[in-house]
Length: 145
Ligand code: RB5
Image (cartoon, rainbow, N blue to C red):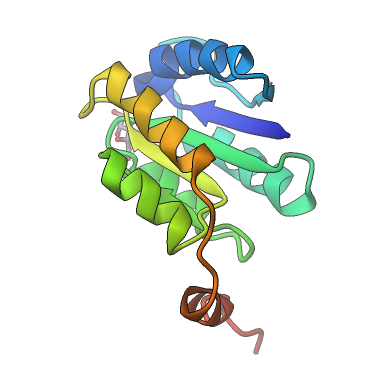
């Protein structure tokens, strides 16, 4: 299982520490940047991560910025991406169980790192429930005109 991960400057530190955690758990990790705490635009790493997940170059993705919103808004422009913003373990669980989020987004400036680890773990370990949730997911993509 390969996980793609990205952050802007606000999420850089959490990203670096999460990569180690994911490797310790046995995942292959592809880092899409950023590579420092120098100010940058989250769009420049979010689009490449989304494209990798859409193409199957990564099975799942994780994205971090200050609030999580810039990442989530950008990632969800991609029709095959379901980027879910989670700031608690309950939401981390439900965003997989109900929404089958293929990219987990977390607000690095608003949760402690220990919570980011717990949210990541529960999201990875939870199974999608399917059923009525699959029907809803099937209705998400924007129809081509
Ligand atoms: C960066 O200052 C901040 O705007 C960014 O990390 C994110 O919160 C945007 O949505």
